[in-house]
Image (cartoon, rainbow, N blue to C red):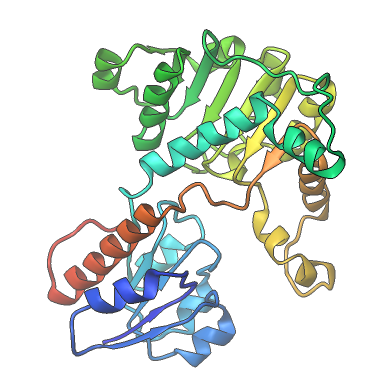
Length: 333
């Protein structure tokens, strides 16, 4: 079979290359999969991508031999799953790699925002100023954190929060009774969590039902001065409502590893020269407002990215491909 890996990052190729069964043609590209590169690899039987590759109908149609799509990510909203299934193409993702890295990163963002770490660093570096009057932060111990979504990542966040001496409120459509029995936390309806939390950390999957689950109405229920952390998906939060909440002071600070419409930010030059279709320029402007705002800390979707996580992603991806080639039963999306 012809196997092609797109969006290869440092360290991935060596592990993937050594883990794929012998006797198959394997190619690697640092570029994302586009219609142009699909034409270049039109004979591919298996492709592996990351989140920047939009696997649309036209991409799928441009790969007539395609039998398996593997995404080296937990999220898969960049893939037209329904059309792939219609064409008889299997799709797999990676579900076990990043609970601790993402949960730890959520707290890295929270600490940085709560204690004004970046403004403090920037102030000292730019002006060698030890004036601390604008750098007073808040103590996490004793505060209430609202954890939205208690899957692998969310439940890890709950455990870390208890280590900081925080009170934990959680919301999940399907509460984890075992987690509630083993970790001091309280499940509550979403409105209650929004109203009582000093910190909100978002860990829900992105689905049509959770689109903009944090919207203007949700911000209206929050305490004034809440800190918002999002390491899940940008589309869970209505960006324009977030801008309004920051402007009003409802949100005192935000740590965001993901942004709604971040693809347009990554490809801004193309967007501004009208080469990128379906760009929401109001959303692009709102994202720049967030990037430039002094109480917002934004990172470029790196919460998952640790040495250990990347090895696990490569291992799971290679195993999925090997299982498919061997005809071994496994779960597909």
